[in-house]
Image (cartoon, rainbow, N blue to C red; front, side):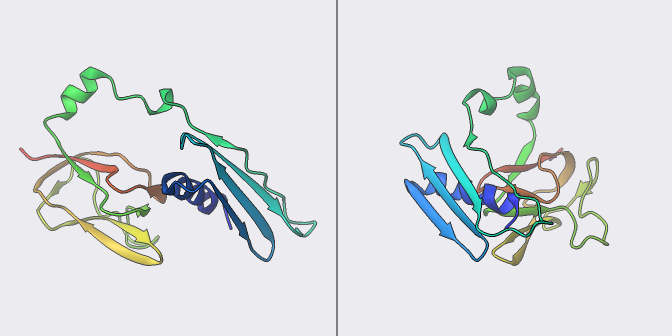
Length: 161
Protein backbone atom coordinates (compact mmCIF):
# COMPACT_ATOMS: atom_id res chain seq x y z
CA UNK A 1 0.00 0.00 0.00
CA UNK A 2 1.53 3.33 -1.02
CA UNK A 3 1.16 6.81 0.46
CA UNK A 4 -1.48 7.92 -2.10
CA UNK A 5 -3.69 4.96 -1.22
CA UNK A 6 -3.30 5.73 2.48
CA UNK A 7 -4.17 9.41 1.91
CA UNK A 8 -7.27 8.42 -0.08
CA UNK A 9 -8.28 6.05 2.72
CA UNK A 10 -7.86 8.82 5.30
CA UNK A 11 -10.04 11.19 3.28
CA UNK A 12 -12.68 8.51 2.78
CA UNK A 13 -12.82 7.65 6.49
CA UNK A 14 -12.97 11.34 7.47
CA UNK A 15 -15.95 11.93 5.17
CA UNK A 16 -17.73 8.71 6.14
CA UNK A 17 -18.30 9.80 9.71
CA UNK A 18 -16.67 6.69 11.22
CA UNK A 19 -14.82 7.39 14.45
CA UNK A 20 -12.18 4.68 14.04
CA UNK A 21 -11.09 2.24 11.33
CA UNK A 22 -8.48 -0.49 11.71
CA UNK A 23 -7.04 -2.21 8.65
CA UNK A 24 -4.68 -5.17 8.98
CA UNK A 25 -3.01 -6.69 5.94
CA UNK A 26 -0.15 -9.18 5.60
CA UNK A 27 2.62 -6.66 6.14
CA UNK A 28 0.96 -3.56 7.65
CA UNK A 29 -1.53 -2.35 10.24
CA UNK A 30 -3.29 0.97 9.75
CA UNK A 31 -5.47 2.66 12.36
CA UNK A 32 -7.38 5.79 11.41
CA UNK A 33 -9.11 7.73 14.17
CA UNK A 34 -11.30 10.75 13.61
CA UNK A 35 -12.41 13.21 16.23
CA UNK A 36 -15.83 14.80 16.33
CA UNK A 37 -14.48 17.37 13.86
CA UNK A 38 -13.65 15.76 10.46
CA UNK A 39 -11.01 18.46 9.97
CA UNK A 40 -8.76 16.61 12.46
CA UNK A 41 -8.04 13.07 11.37
CA UNK A 42 -5.06 11.01 12.51
CA UNK A 43 -3.58 7.92 10.88
CA UNK A 44 -1.00 5.53 12.25
CA UNK A 45 0.82 3.25 9.84
CA UNK A 46 2.74 0.39 11.42
CA UNK A 47 4.61 -2.13 9.30
CA UNK A 48 4.25 -5.59 10.84
CA UNK A 49 7.40 -7.10 9.34
CA UNK A 50 9.38 -5.01 6.89
CA UNK A 51 12.44 -6.45 5.13
CA UNK A 52 15.72 -4.72 6.04
CA UNK A 53 16.14 -3.40 2.48
CA UNK A 54 12.67 -1.81 2.42
CA UNK A 55 12.32 1.65 4.01
CA UNK A 56 9.70 2.00 6.71
CA UNK A 57 7.18 4.76 6.08
CA UNK A 58 5.62 6.47 9.08
CA UNK A 59 2.56 8.52 8.15
CA UNK A 60 2.26 11.61 10.30
CA UNK A 61 -1.18 12.60 11.58
CA UNK A 62 -2.95 14.50 8.86
CA UNK A 63 -4.56 17.71 9.91
CA UNK A 64 -6.07 20.34 7.69
CA UNK A 65 -6.87 23.88 8.65
CA UNK A 66 -9.60 26.16 7.49
CA UNK A 67 -6.95 28.65 6.34
CA UNK A 68 -5.55 26.14 3.83
CA UNK A 69 -9.01 25.85 2.32
CA UNK A 70 -9.57 29.60 2.08
CA UNK A 71 -11.58 30.88 -0.88
CA UNK A 72 -9.70 32.39 -3.85
CA UNK A 73 -9.09 36.12 -3.92
CA UNK A 74 -12.18 38.14 -4.96
CA UNK A 75 -10.49 39.52 -8.10
CA UNK A 76 -9.57 36.00 -9.25
CA UNK A 77 -13.08 34.70 -8.51
CA UNK A 78 -14.60 37.58 -10.51
CA UNK A 79 -12.37 36.84 -13.52
CA UNK A 80 -13.27 33.13 -13.39
CA UNK A 81 -17.02 33.81 -13.20
CA UNK A 82 -17.35 34.09 -17.00
CA UNK A 83 -15.95 30.57 -17.41
CA UNK A 84 -17.79 27.26 -17.15
CA UNK A 85 -16.34 24.84 -14.61
CA UNK A 86 -16.21 21.16 -15.50
CA UNK A 87 -16.41 19.18 -12.25
CA UNK A 88 -15.61 15.59 -11.37
CA UNK A 89 -18.70 13.37 -11.41
CA UNK A 90 -16.98 10.71 -9.25
CA UNK A 91 -14.21 10.11 -6.72
CA UNK A 92 -11.06 8.62 -8.22
CA UNK A 93 -7.68 9.31 -9.80
CA UNK A 94 -7.46 11.97 -12.53
CA UNK A 95 -5.49 11.20 -15.71
CA UNK A 96 -4.88 13.63 -18.57
CA UNK A 97 -3.99 10.91 -21.13
CA UNK A 98 -5.44 7.53 -22.08
CA UNK A 99 -2.12 5.79 -21.34
CA UNK A 100 1.45 6.89 -20.50
CA UNK A 101 2.63 6.64 -24.12
CA UNK A 102 -0.36 8.51 -25.64
CA UNK A 103 -0.81 12.29 -26.08
CA UNK A 104 -2.85 14.43 -23.67
CA UNK A 105 -6.61 14.60 -24.21
CA UNK A 106 -6.65 18.43 -23.99
CA UNK A 107 -4.24 21.28 -23.32
CA UNK A 108 -4.72 24.86 -22.19
CA UNK A 109 -5.75 27.02 -25.15
CA UNK A 110 -7.22 24.11 -27.11
CA UNK A 111 -10.71 24.50 -28.58
CA UNK A 112 -13.06 21.67 -27.65
CA UNK A 113 -16.53 20.58 -28.74
CA UNK A 114 -19.38 19.12 -26.75
CA UNK A 115 -18.73 15.40 -26.26
CA UNK A 116 -14.91 15.61 -26.54
CA UNK A 117 -13.07 13.51 -23.94
CA UNK A 118 -11.27 15.80 -21.47
CA UNK A 119 -9.72 13.26 -19.12
CA UNK A 120 -10.11 9.86 -17.49
CA UNK A 121 -10.99 9.25 -13.86
CA UNK A 122 -10.08 5.84 -12.51
CA UNK A 123 -12.39 4.55 -9.80
CA UNK A 124 -12.11 0.99 -8.47
CA UNK A 125 -10.00 -0.13 -11.44
CA UNK A 126 -12.56 1.23 -13.93
CA UNK A 127 -11.44 3.99 -16.29
CA UNK A 128 -14.25 6.52 -16.86
CA UNK A 129 -13.93 8.97 -19.75
CA UNK A 130 -15.08 12.45 -18.77
CA UNK A 131 -16.64 14.24 -21.74
CA UNK A 132 -17.19 17.96 -22.18
CA UNK A 133 -20.74 19.17 -21.72
CA UNK A 134 -19.97 22.44 -23.55
CA UNK A 135 -18.01 23.75 -26.51
CA UNK A 136 -15.32 26.36 -25.99
CA UNK A 137 -11.66 26.91 -25.20
CA UNK A 138 -9.78 25.29 -22.30
CA UNK A 139 -8.64 28.17 -20.09
CA UNK A 140 -7.22 26.31 -17.11
CA UNK A 141 -6.62 22.73 -15.96
CA UNK A 142 -7.15 22.74 -12.20
CA UNK A 143 -5.85 19.25 -11.30
CA UNK A 144 -2.41 17.67 -11.68
CA UNK A 145 -2.11 14.44 -13.68
CA UNK A 146 -2.35 11.23 -11.62
CA UNK A 147 -3.76 12.98 -8.56
CA UNK A 148 -6.82 11.99 -6.53
CA UNK A 149 -10.05 13.94 -7.09
CA UNK A 150 -13.23 14.22 -5.05
CA UNK A 151 -16.84 14.24 -6.21
CA UNK A 152 -17.81 17.69 -7.56
CA UNK A 153 -14.18 18.92 -7.51
CA UNK A 154 -13.46 21.48 -10.28
CA UNK A 155 -11.26 19.98 -13.01
CA UNK A 156 -11.30 22.43 -15.94
CA UNK A 157 -12.27 26.03 -16.70
CA UNK A 158 -13.82 26.44 -20.16
CA UNK A 159 -14.43 29.74 -21.96
CA UNK A 160 -17.68 29.18 -23.89
CA UNK A 161 -17.33 32.31 -26.07
